[in-house]
Amino acid sequence: MNKIIVLIGAPGAGKGTQARLLEERRGIPQISTGDMFREMRTLDTPLAREVQAIMAAGTLVPDDVTYRMVQDRTSKPDTDGTYVLDGYPRTAVQAKQLEELAKEQGKEILAIEVDVPKDELMKRLTGRRSCPVCGEIYNIYSKPPKVEGRCDDHPDAELLHRADDTEEKVKVRLETYDELTKPLLEFYLGSGRLKKVDGTGEIEDIYSSLEEIV
Ligand code: AMP
Image (spheres, rainbow, N blue to C red):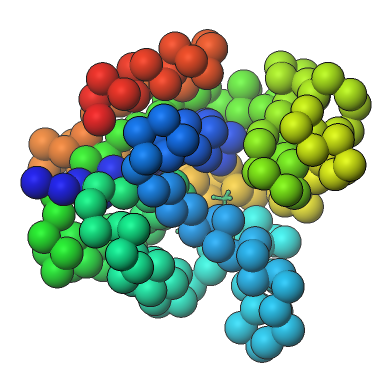
């Protein structure tokens, strides 16, 4: 049966990095609600402005808005098979909505927790930079680009530092995770659909553990 692989982890746990690898190496489409909301930045509509304000504050976009976007994205033919959700669901309501969607799409849900200790997360997030062209993720502490501030593959592009990756915003995002998203682990555990990978250590080692599960 085709699956919806749900990566659950605090901001900075490396969900995006691992989801990208699954897409690159296994052809499993990565669906990142955070990336989709960031893409809305270029739009000048009341909804886009609201989403921008929410993201800038580090809090969550309303469940229904998020669900509609996921529904829409997963109605495209590339998601006919297995796909990965990176950053969704993040609340109990979203988890329920996803149950419905999975049923409609005839897929089973496999949740994977990417576990990283709190003190490590702050360093990862405040040091994170990404390429605006290819989306490659760097970290000024642990995975610096060859030339400071420039993507290795797109040296003309200046690396981005997300506005919500500042210490103050990261605190809010981590609190939001603990309060609203962490309880979902119990939900998936209780229904026998939760696996866990250790999200510390080398990216390749984490990927190997993930690939074994998938
Ligand atoms: P991320 O890139 O996954 O850290 O997401 C960045 C921001 O997008 C979050 O801080 C939220 O404001 C918003 N966002 C992403 N995914 C969701 C979601 N599933 N529900 C609500 N808001 C979300």
